[in-house]
Image (cartoon, rainbow, N blue to C red; front, side):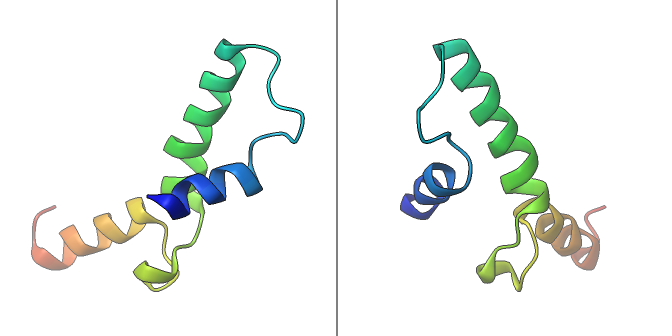
Amino acid sequence: MERLFRSLKTEWVPALGYASALEAQRDISHYLMHRYNWLRPHQFNEGLPPAVAEKKLNFLSGLT
């Protein structure tokens, strides 16, 4: 979990912060649901993003 927050702070959140809580919520939600889960490679998953690794595992397990 700590790695997630470090990645969020160093890769995504603007250095000067957000103008509003709503802007922060929208932007961080986008990072988590789109970039972090679908695009960002993860070393643990052999370089695959979590959502892609899960789809691959489900396919190989016959769950799809």
